Each structure stands twice: as C-alpha cells, then as structure tokens.
Length: 297
Ligand SMILES: [Ca+2]
Ligand SMILES: [Ca+2]
Ligand SMILES: [Ca+2]
Ligand SMILES: [Ca+2]
Image 1 (spheres, rainbow, N blue to C red):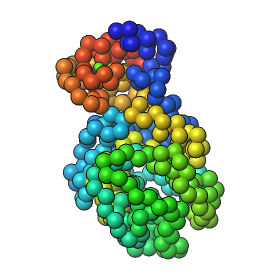
Image 2 (cartoon, rainbow, N blue to C red; image 1 turned 90 degrees about the vertical axis):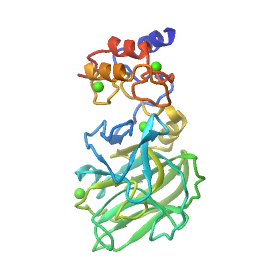
Image 3 (tube, rainbow, N blue to C red; image 1 turned 60 degrees about the vertical axis):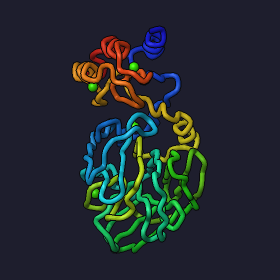
C-alpha cells in the first residue's frame, strides 16, 4: 500500500507505469509503438495491426510480446506513410528473443524483424534482418536493385533477449545491439515506398522467426546512442505508459476496471491487468485505476 501511494504522489497528474522510477520516458519523435501487451494496437500512432498465421502473445521482455512460431506467423499492419522512409531520418528499435537460431545466406535472411515489401525480386521494399551471420538493412526497387548494407556480424544465443536498433540520419545508418554501436554505414538512396502492409516477423515471405519480438517502435528521428542505452537499461520496465490504462487505449475508464475484475486473483508474469506488476491482480491494482479514473479520456 505504501508503494501504491508513493507512486501516485510521485507521478502527479500523468500517472506512469508502476515502475515510474525505472521506466524510461518515451523518446521524442515516436510515430508507432506496438507494445504487444496482449493486443496488436499501436498505442502512439493508431496503426493497429493483427495477428496472422498463428502469431500470439506470450510473456515478452516488457509485459507481453508477440510470439512467432516460424512460417507463416507474423504481424501485419495496413500500409501508411509513417513507414514510407524515403529520405527521412528514422529509428526502429525493439526487443527480440530467438527460440531457435537458424543460419541462412545474406540474400535469404533467417530472421526479418520488420519490413515493408511488395514481394520478392526487385519490387519496392525495405527490411531490417539477420542473414549470412550479419544484421543488415535491405532496400530494393526496380530502379535501384537489391542492396544489403549496414552489415554487422551478429550471432544470437537462443532464449536470450537482445535490444536491437537501426537509425538513419541523412545517408548515415547505424545498427545497435543492447545500446552498443555495431556498425555505421552510408547509403545515398531514396528508400522506395512499397504499396503493401507493414510486417513484423517476416517480409516477402522470408525470415520467419521462431521466437518473440516485443516493444517494436518507429520514430521519425535518429535516436542517439544515449537514448538507446536508456531503453536497454530500462530492461523489463520499458518505456513508460499511462499507469492504470490496462487496455492501453490512452484513457483510464470502466473498461480498465472491468479488465481487472475479470482477471482478479490471477497470478503470473507480465499480466496487463497487474497494474503494479507485483505478480498478482488484486485490490491494489483496482485502487490504482480508481485513483486515476478519467486520466487521458
Ligand atoms: Ca510488451
Ligand atoms: Ca506505402
Ligand atoms: Ca483504457
Ligand atoms: Ca498487482
């Protein structure tokens, strides 16, 4: 109870997640954030996706995450200009855990984290992947042909979480793992605008993951290494959300209360209804929602 009051007093009007002292404020410039917390909503940009091919939810790095079981499981999000990367600065950052690690040639990636493609061959696309033992970014289109660049040797260990990020500012691209800069590379190419859905967990029917992706976020800005280190160091506390907004729709209301009542007494790791993340859905979680009822609505 003391913890409850402490966190409410500390956080004032904007009530952030129970771990207000430890979660990291979402960096500026975020345009999409799929938390994977038992839903496929984009809690920032409203670019809501859906589960495809047996993708589901499982305990992730930060609460729940997207659970993939190889082909054909993935997430799809209807196309939007937010990921028409063109000449713009951007960052893609997320957590990933491989259940099994495959090894494939560079041109046939074993793992594609996220991509936007019109299909195989030299159709318009971009994706962030691992193949040929390297992390890399791929762009392709009828005018440019296949380019696999920003390559960084990377051999993941199964069942271990990694925080990965790619940033672009002008022609400069950087890939980071766990906040550590792995590679800087340069490419002066306008990234083609694919007329196709965004996919998480594969692209062009390749690179299906057997594992979990969590907290996928897109920014229209190149995050600094310092910002990426902060996200990495926040670990399972993640980027701060509004505390008590169980269904993460930006508003604390009766839907959140009902969600807690339905889950009352449940014990487990990373449950959305366990507002203070102490491992059980109980009266403290209800009280937090009551105290902050109406926030964001
Ligand atoms: Ca999550
Ligand atoms: Ca498009
Ligand atoms: Ca809500
Ligand atoms: Ca609780």
